[in-house]
Image 1 (cartoon, rainbow, N blue to C red):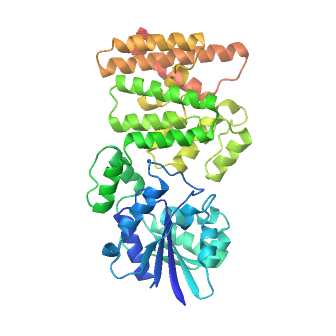
Image 2 (image 1 turned 135 degrees about the horizontal axis):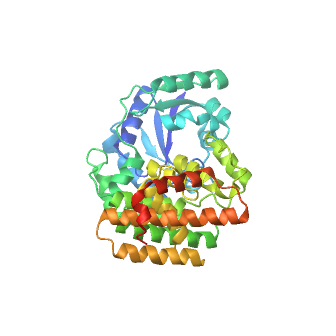
Image 3 (image 1 turned 90 degrees about the vertical axis):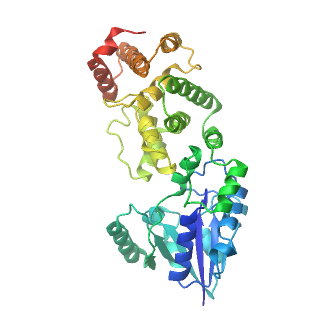
Length: 413
């Protein structure tokens, strides 16, 4: 029988680690042919960075050239890119399965650990032998335990690669490209040249792609608010001398902070469960702030961003006892962005901007943010008490923590 391997992924961008994995897959599984399959619309993750489907296809063709794959029968397919709808692995494997073909499917360890949550895992395991490539930080005991579980539950056929893990991911490479850092040793020269010629993965392309995605998920009114928060975060971050990388992450957090706000409570709880995260104890008691938890969960699992992005989203409405400057800026920007036309919001925005204009040091700028948040929480607590609403414990904790900072009480604003 013909031994056919399928190697799917976003490949955004395709890098030498992908080539490394493909060559070991081909050799260790004794394949007769390997098809590299750039994903169309993967249901389990978000594609970002400004690279189009055509860009990803072309870059894969460059990486998996005859020069790089030598005598191996490796080709790149546009099957998933050209078909309509989401790309489900069970459908792709079904398409390529023939009576005279034995299928093998290559996946990274992160995908391998969650394969049983994919659409029709029983079909995936029945159609193909799974070949798992590990990463440097992987817990091999966890991989072996999952292998045993799949074998017992599904009668799965699984191979764990013997290849040495490659020390970088596509997400890490996108961040390097975003920040103008070296990618030497990680990108094929022809792929690197293509990226620079097409100006892919710079911060503008990344943010444009993210804005487009967010706009497709929420109402125009909320999207207008989101853009206002991004603009305010940029102003506050620059005034506080944030580094470029942190400022880019702050803009990502601003764009994504309300990504689940228009879901129902039940939908948000189901989302949190789907990613196997803990449901907040007071989820139904404080439904208006549940979106910060569900949003943080979604961003944490669907985007390859730093932890700071999800962490800030997780407290942008209520605050928290321990908040970084990054967290505080997002929380404050959400309240004072220019689209907020309430008198209290407009008054605080004016006072913050005036104070920051006169701030001469990073420390002075940070104190302005701290005092502004103290005023925000004072007003929030007074408003909730007046309406007879129960106050969220994180809001109490955040306000108490700010009061401990004696410098904030000097009232710069």
